Length: 158
Image 1: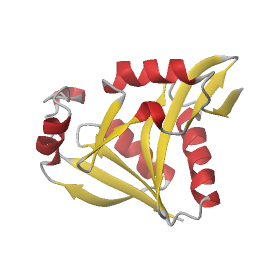
Image 2 (image 1 turned 135 degrees about the horizontal axis):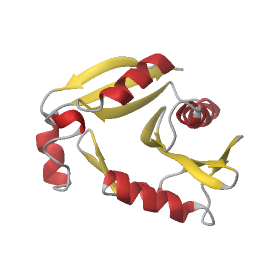
Image 3 (image 1 turned 90 degrees about the horizontal axis):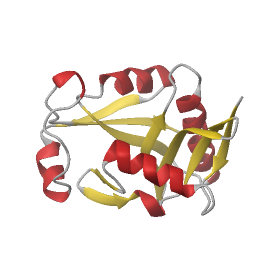
Image 4 (image 1 turned 180 degrees about the vertical axis):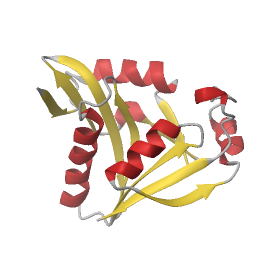
């Protein structure tokens, strides 16, 4: 049974380690901004006490950005449960939308977000050139040997 908990100082370390490993974190770049995920609120997904996923988010005015999302086991509802937890927070804070950025190589996530109910709002052509100026560790090539060039912006209107 998957359990979702808010991030606390007590359960934060494995999430920070995951973001470091998967995202070369803690810094994340989105739309020309650097975000420190180690100070963002979020959620951890646990299965029998073991971390199986995590999400971080940032509320800015009436918008909530899903900054990071990781599911360590596919097709178990972990990603959906984490997004639903962030959606609940966004609604509680009277946000008008939940949005996220992913890169053009992340085709698996793009399919997942669309199945979940996110709509493609914008494609920011060649945005990764600027992102690499802020975070040089972003690779040139990503999943399936696809060059990482563009940011895809998805949203759910609340």
